[in-house]
Length: 400
Image (cartoon, rainbow, N blue to C red; front, side, top):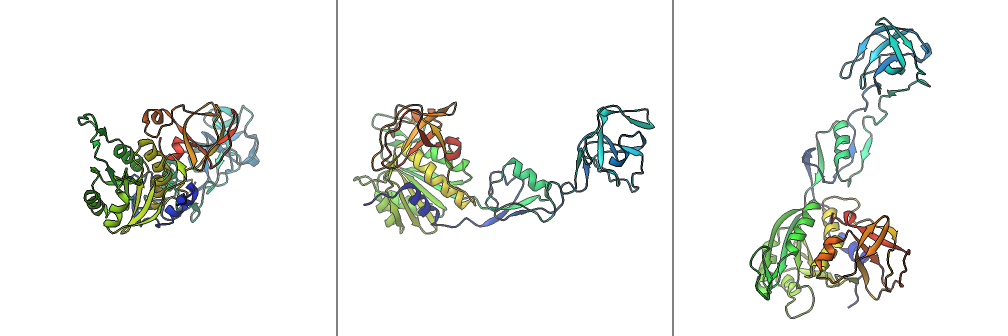
């Protein structure tokens, strides 16, 4: 069977389903969610011309003064009904509305006043409209501020609040069921006699999916038994994504494929031209997308970062669900690549990326010390120190 390139497999996976339905969320609830519709301003910001500094509102035509003090205005007040008279100045504070007729703010440190007259003692503003925030200079009502598919972080939520919104349409959170297969697995923290292994993939995949914005519908261990795995698929069928780890290859105890088919599911594609992570399975079970990840923890981590997390982001409404890479110079030489692209655990220090020395797909200690993956394409030649390589940072992958 021909192995699929990573980018083709990612595109096929993303194409299997549309983003989930929209639902309203208050701004407090919308953190980390993705907009289901463009964010449109309901008001002007600022709502009128405002002072950007503490000082005195004047007419530029009256520079350099002196001015007759005509009152004071503070943030939260309405502008005076009367237009500022020629030769007059009004004490003004940051965020206060400019009086009609005033077009400039003289900073308070540039003047002296006896309570009746204001005199310029410093240089003063260099031009009209200095220290004034024009009405609508940030945005105006009906402006499209953010496109659908934008993730809502603190700056975006502040923008939504300023635009007049208390709630936003966001995509529903994908529900993810996680099944770890293997007779050798015991729950984390349980006694682990010889021949057994603490189950690490479930905890890791739960953390990855939760941080990506998913809801964990279920998570558990299943023995290497066709009936048991088939039953686990049936139980998990109401999730949007079903993730298995282990049993995705072709050995006598690799039962994910036959169990999925026995549960009424189907395989869309299988096996990717990548190292680690070749025996990845992608299929369907009802409306759920099934991802069969390898059992080795590093392989599960890498395939989870490159396939599970982009799928979660896509269903959750992201307009750009795939991780972004950058190029960095190598800190140590790397050998040529064969018929599978390689994802190499590495560290980035001072703008240089260096592969870690131990790359076994079961070695989580090295993975926990890494902060990036070096991507080397199929049949890439040997790389020397200083050569530029493609790098996925942990943050871009969703692992930090």
